[in-house]
Image (cartoon, rainbow, N blue to C red; front, side):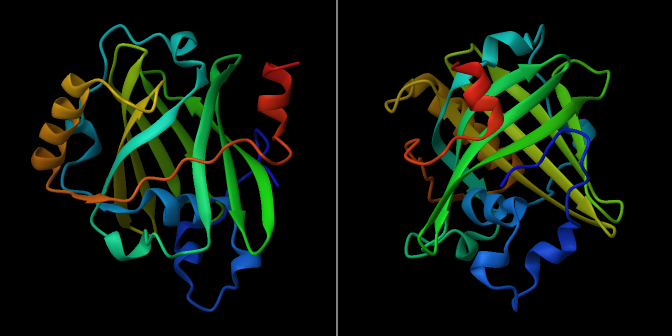
Length: 210
């Protein structure tokens, strides 16, 4: 299961439907459950972006070190569903986020493609029904990365903040910087998940490692 470039993504409001069975949940629902949904304490324009951002330098494997959200009950360690960012790759001017998810005995790879907005370090994608997703690379030295994801659907805005690193033991300096943003955005910490590539990888990962 993967979201191909140019394909619309499901409406964000449908991701919260309680009657949807685990096997029927789309990739973005799993992303929501794993990464969490943070209340939009700041407008998108107020979120900083890394100066001189170079997309090619963020290519490769990333581990999720910390997550922040205002809905911690959605990110439960007991939840059998798991989705985690594996890597980021450039495709022309687009970015592809490669994720792996497991649940109900299923293990699959997922591609999520976002497109440049024309502003440095900022990307966007769209959902069916008119919803939007925006991504900002807040700060990075290309060994550590603070990523901000902003969703809008049917007039409702949600967001999340993630600290990523190339290694399991991240740089304490970056953890301190990340925690400063948590306080500034008034978010709550949530469990972070990482999955090894133990299932069939999506197209982007396969191409990058061929």
